[in-house]
Image (cartoon, rainbow, N blue to C red; front, side, top):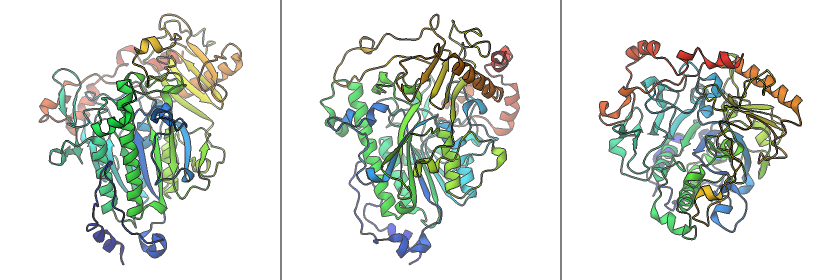
Length: 550
């Protein structure tokens, strides 16, 4: 039987397309599909990359007594023995790009829907490299990497197909999003157009899972597949089908209850995706990567306890994301990878695993960490630049003096080297937020009082993250020589930084000028000329990068 015949046969399988909440059909499979149909198995592995938004660390605790204190994923089909747990750092954009934020111009904040900005167009992306290696590349879910002109869209950045949203958040059912009064629009797309005809008002986790399963069902398994599935969950707004809420009536806090229900829906989605990989004969030669872009937000149900801080901060609670890699191809399964891993490492790791090429002129910031993950060998990565944001200079007490004349500690920055982590400026809200599951108290009554103020207090910290992952003991006064070395490393990194690109709001982005849909508003020829007229946030200041280099 040829591979194409197998694909045609799938069409007649009962329940070929099932959602996250439906019980999958159990079709009889060959005992060893790879042995039975070797012509249908590619030499290079397929990859299913799952990116979950704002998944809090607390949902990965190990107790089995309650939902919020157990492992979040109901992965009986995946199997604990076949996966490797890991903690990684980095933002969403770096999955596809392999450059630190300072090397992209995106080191300040996020890309707003109204900004003429996107992932830099002059650099190659992960799906583009995988396509060169013979992969089919598909994306389902949230893009959030800019869309002001068509060249920024996923299908122009290496994906053969795209189904999902362009913005960072929105309604899970209606797929509408408002960016302010009179700035509301529809945000569900198929390829480069609005997906009006495919929209049935379905909850996005279920809808994206169905779409991903459909891609698996219709793809030729003899060709390697890269499927990037970026779920909207568990980002705000907290919305979930009521049947999931019923499981958590015992959770008093309403935000936490909804958050738990949303993660349960994700559990079922991952379970059914794994079963689909087995049903359509990908599983034995597939790497599943489960990742998150940052820590949780306590204001909307997340909990990073006992880590410090939250989403949008440089404390561990904001930047440490827990995930796993699952694959029969792992040499050592059921273990934990304690090596340093940054999200930019997935680019060279997956390209190398897919037998692609990494040109020297790519100037990648990531490393191939497959041997560290699969075999438990030491990671080639020794440091991580979490970020340098030259615009965010709110530490009023920061100074060159506090930085030993090497660095202005008013600038927000964070660097990890081995066991050590250095922070300067205002890293963001800095308290430890206890779990709020079984109480309805206001958060302000539950938080500790160790907040970092803009107008006074410290502007530099040093922690040994290995021995103090909760960042409670500042060692900057005890080890000034370590501080100086790390400050010098920050200076070296900053010399390689490109100017921040954070343009002003463009009123032409309003969906009312685009038939009520969020989408590209630049015409390429006009936009290119307009690019030269736009001034970014730094233009009138002469560039903060030069200032902090003294």
